[in-house]
Image 1 (cartoon, rainbow, N blue to C red):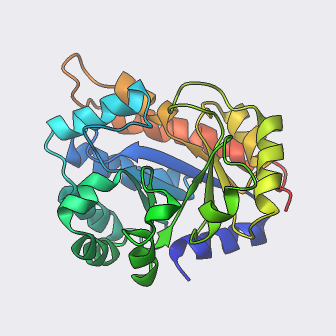
Image 2: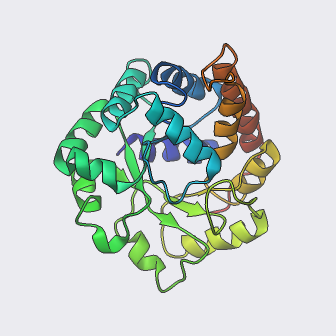
Length: 277
C-alpha cells in the first residue's frame, strides 16, 4: 500500500474528500519552493502534486507555464526536484507526493534511474500528461513494478469505449480533468462533473479526483461533494505569483500567500458532504 492508498483509506473512514494541491517545483526559487511545500500539510493539504518544470508544457495554461519558466530560470532541474522531495520527507513521512509533468525530462534522466531515485526520495505517484496507455511499457509498467502509483488523466472527451484502456494500468486514483482545454482556462461545472465522476466509477473502484477550473473554497466544496478529491493548482500559482516583487523574486509574503489560500480552500473541501460512492 502506497501513501496515496493509505490516505484515501484514512479519508474514507473520516467520510470526506481529499484536498490536493499543485505547485511547480522550484517556483519562484528552490529554497522558497521547499518552504511552501513544507507549509501545505499544516494548512490543510491532504496530498501534494509537484510539477516538474519543462520548456514545452502543452497542457498548462499561462499561469503554470510562467511558474515553470520562473523555476527553470532559477536553475530547477528534475534532479533538484527529487532533492526537494527528499528535503520535504525529512519532516513529513505521511503526506503523499505526486510528481506531475511530461515524459521528456524523465526520458533524458533515464527511466530506470529516475524510478530508483524517485522512490528513494519519497515520491509516491506519477502523472505524466503526454504518455497515453499505448505507451505503458515506456514508464507506466516500470513505475508500477517500482512501487509507484501511475495516475492517469480522464477528460470530458474520454468516452466509454476509451475509458477501459485509460484505466487498465492506473493506480492510486483517477484524475478527471473537468474542462476541455488547458489549466486555468475555465471554471468547473459541479453538476457536469458529478455525472462524469459517476460514469468513471462504473468502470473502476479507484478514487476519482477532479482538477482544472477550481479556484475558490465554494468551487472546491461543490466538487468535493461529487468526487473523492478536489485538485487546485492555477489559483495557488496565481497567489504565489501575486506575492513576488517586480523582478519575480520571493518576498516575505510569498509562503503565507499560498498557505492562507490553501487553508481557505481546505475549509471548503472539509465542509462538503461525504462524496457519493
